[in-house]
Length: 160
Image (cartoon, rainbow, N blue to C red):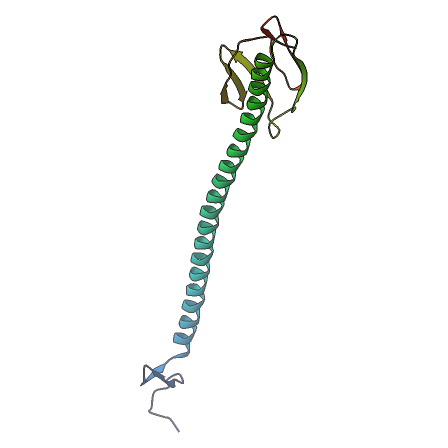
């Protein structure tokens, strides 16, 4: 016998927001694909935000580390300059005949440095930075990293 009723694909009745609805099997495939796409986009967004947060955190940590390094190297340069200025002042106050060997470090946290003298000042220069310390006398000669000799001969201060 011939059936007069049209053949429809089997639909399942489901509840969506509390209302009965029917969906064809193709609708279910589309929903599954949409969910997979949404999950992929959410995962991509999550990793993008995570990379952004990591980058900002890394930049802040790097800047703070650089500030700490600059502070420590500045303190070390000031200590070196202070040692030299103190020895010069001691040589002046002790008078004629004073002499002493002093040893200066080879570098400032891996950076080479040089010491120069100008009337009344000791300059310690490293990585385009300066530490300046006052002293009460002019010095003939220069200080270098390593061993140095300072003496007062007739009221004139000599280095090396």
